[in-house]
Image (cartoon, rainbow, N blue to C red; front, side):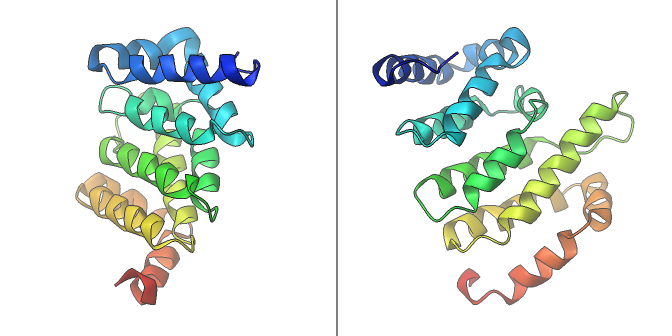
Length: 180
């Protein structure tokens, strides 16, 4: 657990950050102990610690085509990131950027065997709806870019149309004066 004294936590996070920048390490870190590293990072980011920003950035480093589904499967990842993206502090843009990175790689596949993967896609769409109500123009920029990524794929468009609140959020963003 990364719940140690502040100095130990900082060094552990720095080490994870360095490890996470290496492409070949990302899968190992994300898959370790059924998502234990991601769960620990979520704990750090949702705590009021000075390391929250670093935790979000590390999650961003770890997000790529090979890891996004397994990150998305960790309970609470989209809820935590979207909550952070709606804050009015320095954490919001980093959290929104991580959601955007996930949206570039998570696409709906109707032949998915596991319902869990369908749930990951729906949770990601809900995170986009949530961050669409942010007061930060930088967060809204990531939301709009993520919607655009999703809308590029036919199967995602079908899911987007049926996702509760998504069309309302897009309509609101269309009329948002801060999003010119």
